[in-house]
Amino acid sequence: MVLLSRRLVVPLTALLFSLEAPTVLAEDPSAARPTHIQADTLIYSKETRTYEGKGSVVVVQGPSRLEADEATLNVATGQVTAVGRVHLNDGVSDIRGERLDFNINTTKGVIFHGRLFVVEGNFTVDAQVMERLSEEQYRLEGASFTTCSVLEGERTPWQFKADKAELETEGFLYARHVRFCILDVPVLYMPAVLFPAKRERATGFLFPQLGSSSVQGFKVREAFFWDISPSQDMTAALDYRGKLGKGADLEYRYAFSRNSDGRFWTRLFRDSQKIPSVS
Image 1 (spheres, rainbow, N blue to C red):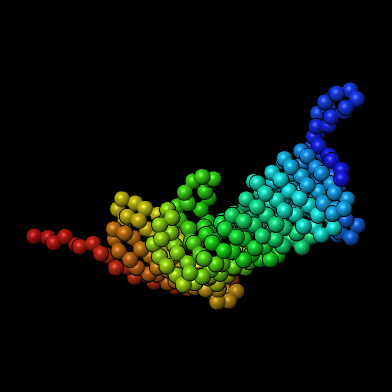
Image 2: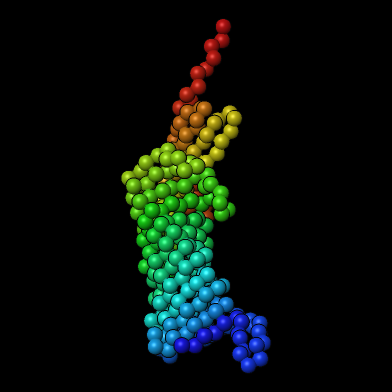
C-alpha cells in the first residue's frame, strides 16, 4: 500500500514539509484514455489496484472532470465512488449530488440526490435517484424539472414534479404522474407529459410562461408545439389569467419557398369580468 499526502513527516529530522496535492496518472494499459487523480491525501492499494482519495479529490479523464470531498477509483475497472459535494462535468451535462457511483470508462452510473443542468436545453433536473444509462440518457426517480435559473437555497418559482421520468438530453424528457407546482404548491396534475430537451425544433409541450400583474393577476400559458415538417409547424396554447379569465390560441406557420410563406393565427378568450352597466 502506498500513501501519498499533501504533508509528509520525515522521522530522522522531525521536519514537516508542505507539498502541493499530488497528481497521479492512474492509467490502466487497456484503457482508451488516461485517467488523472488528485487529492490532499491519496492511498493506493496494489492488491485491489484502487486509489482512495480524501480532501479536494479531482478525477479527470478526457473531457470528464469529477470533484468530491472523498472518492475511490479502481484502475482496473474504472469504477468510481464519490461522496460529499460531488460535481461531474463532461461538457454535455453538469451534475451535482451527494453521492455518485460511476464508471469513467462506460460513463454509466447512479447519482443520489442529484441536480443535472443540461447545457444544450438550458434546463435543470433534480432527482432523488438519477441513473445515467449513457452520456445522453437518464432514468429518474423523485424528479423535478424547470427552466428557471435558481441559486442554491432559493425556492423555485415553478417546476414540474414526477414520480418517474426518462430523459434524453438530445431528445425528450418523458414523465409520468406529473404535478405542475408553483412555489412547491401543486396546481395541476397530468398523467404524462413529453417535453423537448434540445434547442432544435421538436414536437412536444413547451415549458410554461408565467407572470403576474395587478390588472391580470396570476398568468400562465402552456403550449404544445407540433413539428409537422421542415417547412410547417403549429402551436396550440391554453392561456389563464386569474383576474380576467381563460382562453386558447392556435398558430400555423409555413415556408414552402422564398416566395411562399405565411402565418395563420386565431385566438379565443373568455373574459370573466362583468361589464359595468351604464345608467
